[in-house]
Image 1 (cartoon, rainbow, N blue to C red):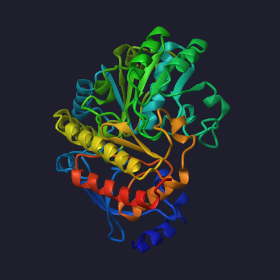
Image 2 (image 1 turned 30 degrees about the vertical axis):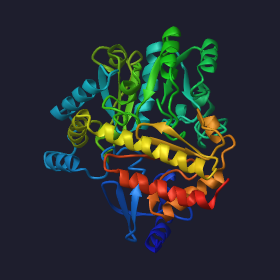
Image 3 (image 1 turned 135 degrees about the vertical axis):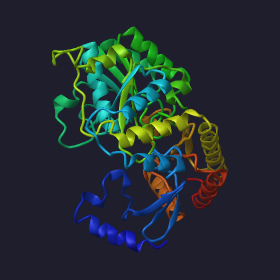
Image 4 (image 1 turned 30 degrees about the horizontal axis):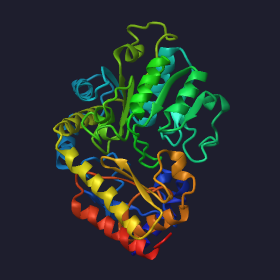
Length: 430
């Protein structure tokens, strides 16, 4: 596969931006591929190579790249105004649509990213409960916010970045996903303001909740007067029109949204939840700044994202997307499992709906710790590289996982299964 133009771009890029990319997860050894354009479920690099895209914009593009409904919406708003810096009708319609679709959302405020939304969610929880300690899952990814930038990567013992102060992270307590017994013990010993959880661990390997886990968290939080926060940046509008909380039938106190809430391609985040919690942001009710929670941002709810986001949410609301993408997700998980079993490969798939994790482990992992202990990392990297050589894009090399869009078909699913079988033949018994 010819990638000379990507190599040349990489050599230019590393002179002006660290590692030559704008996000570490986009880097592949020996250098990343640089994309020229995208359409549907495919991307095309600067060398003219065509790839099936199972990354779909960090999972944000539920309908695939450049769906006509989104392009039409963009064209419809672009000349009206890109940024008013003042209230407008589009943001009201946007908020109304979120409240209509998300079961826990009685009120909503918009941010510019999922990281920002998580930051404000934690601040709200601490202000509401008047507690400081927070619980997060091992392997849970909530963006770059200091207080949540711990216990992301195995062995979950060190901060995830230089420059984090002890004060920023000392009140964050890691919790094991799918282990209610241990979580209950920790909650008994610590007054937690909140527990924040991805209903399906995303970057942790697309690991789904076991039956009763989310409901068990809900009940524990009720028992200990702790707020339950669902980080639905990935799962929001991906599993169902109302996200994971609708899909699994468990309602959190606060929900964090991002990615798909903006329709794909526009920077966005949102915090929504119970009225009595969200109203802590209302400066007209809480005059004393020590009693209210600050929220703001220059580009929050700009007309571009508000209009396009509303149009796309209404499209998700129609519901036709989900039988298709969820069926393809199940087909991919089952197909890969059959290949691994046929060729005696120590590997398993996890996930739910259109989210698929691939784990080179001896047993199917039920949490992020099990996904990393005993993992054949070299085989995972080889698999990722083999897929890329066969023009299939997936992240990340050490823990492959994938998202399926409405633009994918059974043809693309069958193709990745067949490529995986070629790989398995070469690594039989590993």
